[in-house]
Length: 401
Image: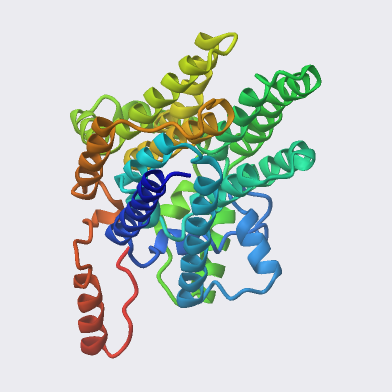
């Protein structure tokens, strides 16, 4: 490797680390009471959607009913998620071009938002997906993918639209292999996996919601055991069916406020997804695959599938953050599978644009959960506020929501 190329790679690697750290610190906060309440639900009240993680923790006798134990686990999971993401990037950002554009994603508001979701089940799903995609044992991949997908649906049925498309697109790309046997096996998995995941997701999503009696029993049991206030709105969600959510969202689509939020989320997050979908298209065109239009269409489906979650859930910024993440994942998978020039140079103009986009991303901040605003450099205001509240009250305060 030439000295100039080596220095260039070191620069972009350093920028990626710094940009990622800043983006994460912008969104970092204590896990909210919604996620803490969710973690109390296992299968002790009967089979319910999103109960797998709580069931495992309760079976292992992990005292997540204590808020600070739950918070420690949540931050540990966030750290694991960050490390897994770094491993995924390292194994897939093989070209100089990919290394140039990676800081654009890691500095984005999508990474800030993912860090802000500390304690949420999304991080477990993301970690499972990244570990699966980073696996280098191809012989075990089919069995591993089916196992991971089945478990992930039990963690949260949103997996079918938010993270599964990345695993599916891996097999779509593998189906372009020049070897006939590998191509056929990959095509089978690219068809069979979605069928399995869709069936499992529909079973879980359409499973009868908790009854009022079940919820009353659960609320009493959890309230007695926990040392933090239970979020009543989460209890209400567990009593809603898929049809109820669709009906609620249909009403939101008729309000002007929703479409204003759509504009804000698009400016903060969706453009990142569009940008990396465009980069994937360029790679597919350069690779001269047999059916480029079909592959580009499937790449777009995998990239923008998480945006469909707004049809059944109202966390708009959350879905667009996951859309940006999925689009970047599709881009890196495409780089690893289709790039014919791993040592290709990015142009000076592209490098300038990348730095400009990083600066734009780090100045972006809107739409965080629970009315939070982004933390700003040097990120000491939240710490000062926590210390002040602790001194005044005599104990470390819990989050308000």
